[in-house]
Image (cartoon, rainbow, N blue to C red; front, top):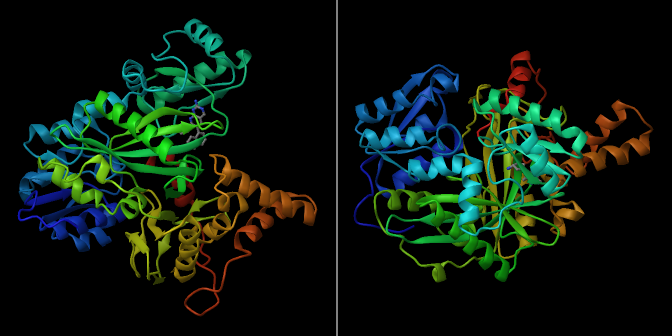
Length: 515
Ligand code: MV4
């Protein structure tokens, strides 16, 4: 932690909730900045409200009436005398209109400029800018497709199989895989109408399909004085339904030479966008380890702690300093990666029941600690997890000199972790960490689906066929290596509870997912 004589701001409003709001409030306290929380009706008792120096209600549970209300957030910032707003991730963090409203109100938005956010918000404008900047991007159309005839022509040039993607999309929303020309018209119509419904923008474009790619992303950081640096990469290939589950830094496939090339490309992306503050450049990496620009996230990422562990930097401190106009206090050659960090995302969801969100009161909570362990959490014992938001409860991160040691340390920390009263996905991680492909670093975006399917298949072969055997097999495979809980009861993490229909409905509202 850097000690500076003067806090970068007097008071920061945190326009978010959950673990990331707590994370930002912690940074405020360390820097001598007063913190302001906002909360919806169901978050009155949330941890971020308890931890902030001041807190203001901003409306009903529905995010559209509270955490997404620009007018209310600006009002609270003015009323409380906040001189800056940190948006966290999800919610309004990538909303250029919010950044502009802050600027117009004379409040510093802790993030990039609205112009950089707008450029990267449209995947087609980002692709055009990257083409001009000489950044390798996934082959395909640089622009949106105006007609099905144009789509046919571009598709024939690019070749099948290909991906149709929404220009306003990102994170997997509005994507269609097209195997052959006969499937193009229907996929084109479907992608357009899905994009229109989801984003009120029907623009779609084409990319060549990269088969079973890896997702590797580079953290970049810029100040307002022209310094723009890369801070290593994160491997995020372990995902389920476009939701990251395990992340690590460094990536097991990236060596020093590839890291430098990717880092320099990521900085070129940032320069082309006039980028300042923290940002992430996402790449797809194919089997030959060729990498292609995919999209840029103009915010702090959920998985930033793995980068903090290996770089020794505090990215939220840096965000605040840079937003206040300070220079980055180091150069590229000063950035050294030390050891290896792995993060697990702890969700309130039930791996035995198709990962449905799991509601309820946290009756008992035992947290891991010890050397090299960090737990970023928004929960506490006695708190009731609301059903209205992303079910991310906490992130458990372990750091050690080598990847194998980090994995062993994470497994040790997981054995200490107990959440009672609700279901969590904690039991899933041991199966991941012990999987031969994970141990070998053989990761690709299909890893987790394959792991779950492979366990189901193996057990179905053992026990005969039928859906019951399959489901039992998945459960058994996940839970077989679960050690007795750290609370000495021998109970597994979580406890049975009835999944009410409200939860099943919420499960379908994928749009609520923060990231
Ligand atoms: C792709 C792809 C293969 N080829 N694009 C999914 C989320 C969004 N950010 C982009 N995604 C993909 N784009 C081309 N041209 C495969 C995926 C993809 C994926 C990417 C990253 C992490 C997990 C993924 C899971 C399935 C598909």
